[in-house]
Length: 557
Image 1 (cartoon, rainbow, N blue to C red):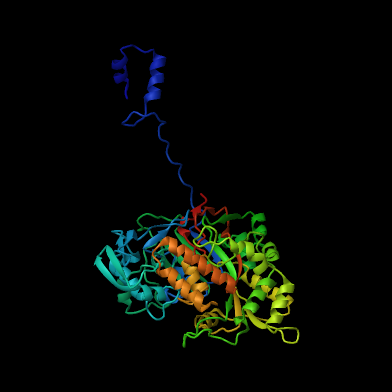
Image 2: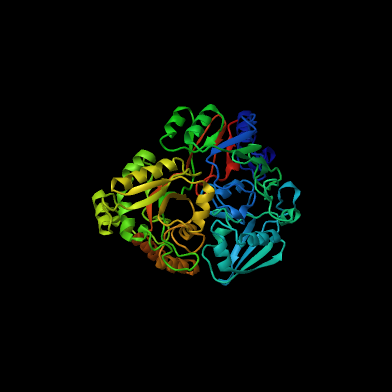
């Protein structure tokens, strides 16, 4: 709309005042003549408060430059530099396109992925293609691959067809409800890296090399073993430009050390036990919570698995933890309300069955109603159960509890010791075990522990969490029963959502009635940030490794 058009239309002369009013009302700078204020320039950003963002964490249990040989939690050291076929929305935790623009299931027996064109690997290693995706698959089916993905990939995929540079098909031996999760950031395991880079090295990179390049928003810069790992911004990323040119994971195992470092400005982000968080906030630090928290904590029984050599069950028949009465007694020894109030600041929501929540498939309200009787704190009932199992003051139950720090659960050692104290209160003789992570990892993976427990934590999805922590059907290290394993394999192979939900309920019932672990809490994912450095951070808080989407950290300018 313009002034001459108006004059011709109404055929009258407007007063100067009216003319100015109409012109102001009709002016828009828009071809359609819609009204609007003139655009305002974006305010200029101030200087960065620092060139390098420093994140203080408990050291990864495994350091390596080879992705397939570390578990998912330690695999977070690659998260800033990697991308998966399927991404994870930082606000909702839902699957979104990442390297793949679309994917589809064809006749229940093949998954087809179409790749984004033009995506570049770091450091000049060329475009991401379907050959790199096939290489990732071949990496994660090697015998030394860990992290819970090898078994489902071997079991589920028959062959891989490279259609062209930007299209690949996974032909299935059998349908696996979890296969898309294996290729997504929701389960940070199978990352896509450069096959050309691998070929140029002639084998796996060691610490004199660097990790195989990915295509994420940051690229690897340097590391000092047992001290830190550093990344620099990848300016060639198609859509993401992190605020900070560099960031660093700095290893600080003691919570008190991380608190002091945060308050003095030595680091800018960290996680702390709930009992230390007030000291941080009183010192001017801010709490930032994940947007889609699925974090949970529990005690794992290391005893009752299928023998890895003979496939017989149980693998350790002489373990006292093999007795269901003992497992129930240890559950009823734990005062969850007190534990929540003293070590979790009251933030824990009860976890009734591992990998289940009221919003997930298979939920059974009977678990909530029956929990006080079946699992609730009752030292007298716990002692009675132990007595029925043959244990008393003259013949006390003896067991072992591991005490160690965990990257994504601050205060883990204190929690394990508190639970051990509850066991001692009902007459259990507890040996507190402190082993280095390599020993613990190797013996755990071989299912070598027969009468042990340790604190577990994860944010893994329902299928992944069940596969690893409540069954022996994949890479597993937890108590189970043959019925539990059989039911879980049914779930993975079921294509009908309604039928799968019913199977989930049956699976949950088996876990619940078998006291397969000691469920504790579902927890918010929270970190402390220095507000002089960090303005905001949008992250899901739903990954096994806890730390993700660090390229979303916004600087305070």
